Length: 463
Image (cartoon, rainbow, N blue to C red; front, side, top):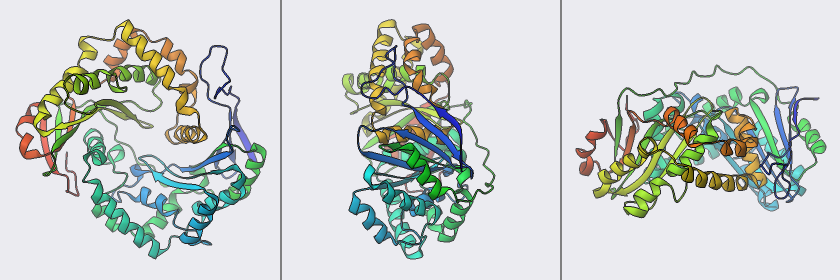
């Protein structure tokens, strides 16, 4: 049976309900565990007769080692049928009731999920359970899948925006850990066998390494009973040893990775370095500062590079945060001929954080903006489901949500200065440029130690 280890009775503020301070609070949800170690998150939302469910397992690209892409390929193969249903029959059953199915992996966790009408709860949940506990793993379907997958990898190389973040992660974090590729490359994927997929599934897909997240129009008592019946007999098992992740450190010198795409007519680039972990206590203040720098249309970067200089259609800055570390980068693209001008202007604009700082009026505008943008991020059951998935997968709690407005309100110009100094990388920036190397090779040497690779290369030898 079940034992509840934590119930969070929080005030639901979606749509009409507000606290006495008017601040957004995460809707109430229940967190519990089954005897086999499976974690359940249940959040009732009755505004729309829909249910969003995700089954999350803590295994991702950081666990792939030499078998790059294995975690992603495994979770994508879960939707290709069950022991009792072929892929065609499974698809027919879900299509008939209009349920949408998805599967994905990232660096740290994998998930399988569905969105469906609440009236179809008793049809969809058993199918999801079968996909995770008893996947079909049929050789013919696997071969067809891998052929499609390899083609997608090739197509991705035609779009620098599709691959540049992987190059940047490798530059910041190294070859393994957070520098791992979620999708893998042609060589690694081509070597992955169905037997290895089965072994990966057997090793990592255990109840004590997984959670089921349900948000939407359902009765919690009935849902708990059904989930216990479907997943209660899933056998707990010891897990493989988790890898020791290589975390980003402050680099001793600037490095630039030049990725040659010989037919490119523009240069896509990222500039940045070490960031923050997902549970950083100052992440709210950091996000406000980053809004001013590059996270809204009227940001400094977009004004400088797009509005005033006309060098690009858009320039942004972002923190990508994981459970133990993260990175920060400025991103944009420009014509090959204006590459140096755009990079120089991006750096000069970024340096305004230290040279000019953030005044009271600019800060007040950003604070109003982020407070207005925050509640709509968590209105729908799918958005709330994604939040709970991230909370489980990355290991942070709801305090970020519930104290968001308070933290925004308490931010001062003096405090922004301290956060900029501590968390925004300034010295020895790291660069990735994807473009026509022959046109920019000599010019980019001023930014740091240059390593050049071809976008068609299988291996990325940066270090």
